[in-house]
Image (tube, rainbow, N blue to C red):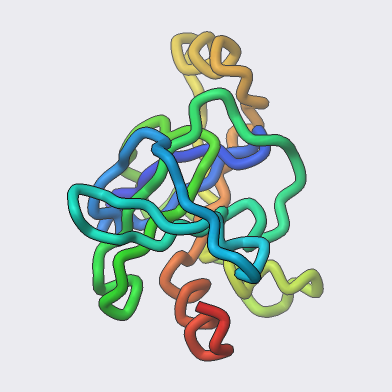
Amino acid sequence: MTDVVEFELGQELYAMDIRFAREIVEMMPIARIPRAPDYIAGIMNLRGEITTVIDLKQLIRIPGTSGNNPKIIVLVAEATGGSNLGIIVDDVYSVIQVAESDIEMVDEGLSSGVHTFVKGIIKFTKDEDDRKQADERGRQGTGLILWIDIKKILDDLVKSGQV
């Protein structure tokens, strides 16, 4: 079993390894940084720690407007190379346990380059209560969650000198 955080970006479901999430906080004021790349939303003061905030939707180029209940997932130092870093997502739903049999790993054979940030695709079946909750939240309910490799995304940014 693997534990992941389930969240929304552009009305689609995504997940990331729970071990890279330090905490989830409500959206708070973010100071913009002049001349920063578009995906850097700015910096925030989180209990006395200056934390850089990245707009994950901008970073991985997901179209759509921001959700009604945006959150910031603050990442652990292991994922960020020691920096204080958070990512903005449209909403966070839950921490779920996923069986290996429900994950289809993504290989480099995909021509779209999606393998550079998608670790796998989580397939899940929904019961009636899950469908009702998904409808209430406005989720599309495809039964698929894209499992992103947040560590790889951040490592690539650091290597290219963009963070």
